[in-house]
Image (cartoon, rainbow, N blue to C red):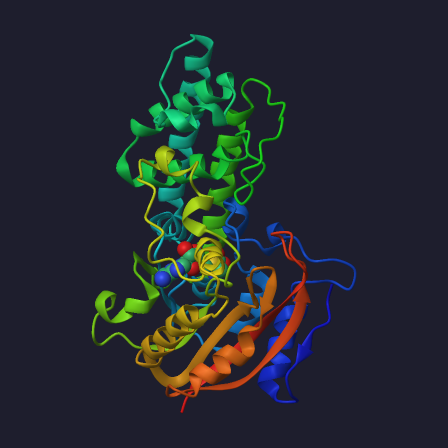
Length: 391
Ligand SMILES: C[S@@+](CC[C@H](N)C(=O)[O-])C[C@H]1O[C@@H](n2cnc3c(N)ncnc32)[C@H](O)[C@@H]1O
């Protein structure tokens, strides 16, 4: 599905259409895995295609400029920004997203990378020995989640978790993310976004093998990022509500660009998506209270007999106000957004943003759109890249 349409003949709209085209060959979409760096390391629903972001960064920014992504998710903007020698800052309301972004965008020199790989090999070998010796290291799970893995997989993941905890903190944080990258794949759950149980035949030792492979994949991605970034400035990442940038950012922090993808209304529940991961990361499941546009909130609104997206519009208004105060005026804000969904009805985001931006000092300059398949099972939806500039 690829009916890419620039909104007008401007250079900017053509560049945004080009960014959409970059993610697809004529026949098929390019696999995320082909984009390199640390992108393929960990799944994350709703992540942007790295080649889309790479093209936008190439066409709109200059090395050394400052970029903010206040909905950083798995860190696509930060990884691509660092590779293009931008100075990046990212935040997300979900602490797992923040940890994942911190791992994916870590700048590790050769020595640090080798230390990490040594630690991963050690954990892998100790786990192998523990399984052979039938040692039992209980999984750090609440009772309600125990049935999500078959017995032998759970024992293996428990051993991996135990041996990771014995490693030094600088490696442990990343090894835990490696574990996070594999736990859903080896569970009975179909995927991050679908809790449907499926029968998976998983032989003994496979989770442990995958753990090592993932760690090696991360090391390779770090190596490429380190080279491309010119060992430039590491990114800053923190947990922050995008509607409260004023409370989370230093008062003087300004950015030439905001390159981001806010949630698509009524599409995912990001906090719930990672339910199986939090305990392995020694994290509590975060509250979904401040998550904007979630499927859960849209459904609640619908059961209250309203499909009036006023709350959502209020949130978008606050977001645009927060962003406008942070821009230098040199660049602008690039949003990758999709039409929303309430009660099975599409809610076009373009007219909403156009209306709301008129109440701010941001002007919606131009954009490009395309139709994409809806991975949540709904009708195909329109997705847009939109450029805003300070008035
Ligand atoms: C479309 S995803 C971003 C994906 C990201 N661009 C990537 O490539 O991985 C939207 C993100 O918004 C985050 N989010 C939702 N409400 C938020 C809020 N109020 N403040 C900050 N982040 C929020 C979600 O946790 C999710 O990670």
